[in-house]
Length: 219
Image (cartoon, rainbow, N blue to C red; front, top):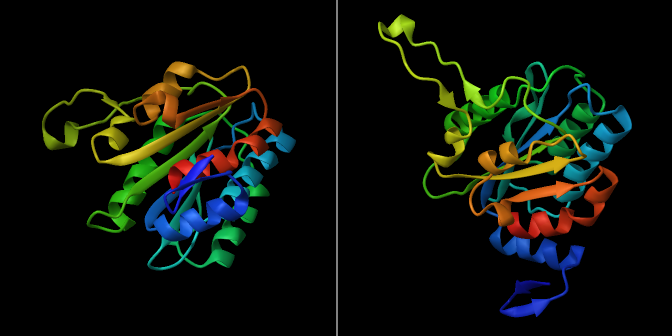
């Protein structure tokens, strides 16, 4: 159930769409793990989860705007920064769906790239910034970035990638799928409290049962 117009209502697609229309002013970044440990059929199901989520949102230049990334041994962006035309968002997701990277799992680099996208292209003021990241496993290099400050004339400490979210007012949801997920990493990435921002599912098929619940939280 969810609250709409001060009434408790069954969480259906129609109700969630109404909720997102009322509360849909935010910048959203969708981040998909395309590493080689995800078989292609499951990877497609993961992207389809994002497609189902996007279908509920009120996309527009003054409403919800969306950036889309896949990560593996590198980080790839699909489409423009914070697209606001539904057909463009759908085309970007479709492009990502047909382009699995099949490498390692550089979650730390993905977080850094997503933060830079929000910093450089997100709306200012009090427009909420939201990230949803989906992964099937543990980051290849962990979540600590090796930042090189030598060119500045001094050394600097390693930086936890997830602090890009937590120190900059970005709300992060982490979705882990399968038995290879590192729950501690999900908890570090996600905004607190973890029980509201972390989702662990046994399989990609199970994602069908949670997209409305996550969209409800986002909106």
